[in-house]
Length: 325
Image (cartoon, rainbow, N blue to C red; front, side, top):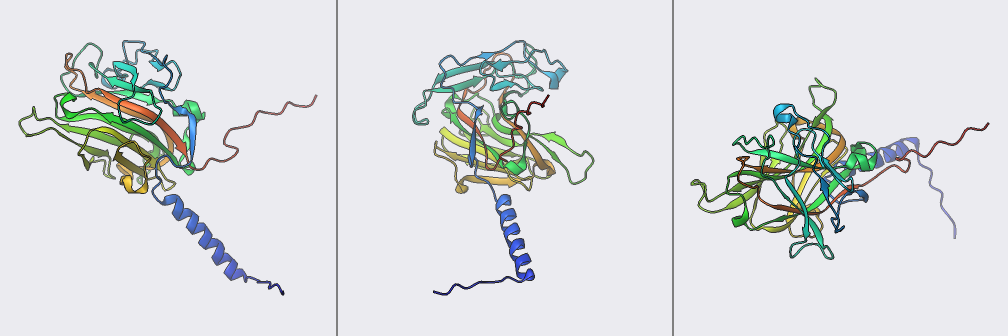
């Protein structure tokens, strides 16, 4: 049998390399399904430790409202969560038995509720929010560049509508913290916080004949929030966000506990016109009327997890070699 040797011309070789480059680039720009790639074991939580607890260090932070940081901030004893630097943590953070229909084998989830979501013990009588922040930077030792294709996934238990706080408006959010740049280039890099909000329409409000809810996406390129899909059922939902190398965020959500797929993409946006350069963390917002007497809706999360789809082998710096004497 005779073998045939094919010799490529320089022009053909250049064209071939260019096609391969553009194919790889296009794949990196396609929406990334959250949960793709390597799960970072210590960035996130499964709440399976029966001794899981949180050190509140109250009174909590309210620096965004009154400039008071009230250090030291709160943190979980496993060091995977901390109080947000701008707003306080939820007033109640309690490990509970996983509600029916949750992930197979899961025995523990986390319940979050708040009473004072603004300045501690000083109700504002306006909706305010608390932050519960994942320590992703602590786990990774750095912010994560978008070239690593970062994403996160969480299961969220939505209680029946009649158990929600009797208030129309934002009630809960799943969000990311990132650094990026705007096209105008006025600031080379800025911090911003895209995410998915859950908005409740309460039948206690005369404008609504029945309880209902929907997603609100933060945000479009102009900075305006975008209406997302209606929430037609309560119970468990799977939610997640990802970021691709073009600096775009991708939003995913679906009812149930199954892994997300490409069919579950809600939207893809450059929030506020930012191009993302670095993913810092993910976190949850808990919103209430902040009237000093009404507790927020009780939200339960399980198995929040952080992923990178491609990480350089030398992403972690090796220990320095000892010098010869």
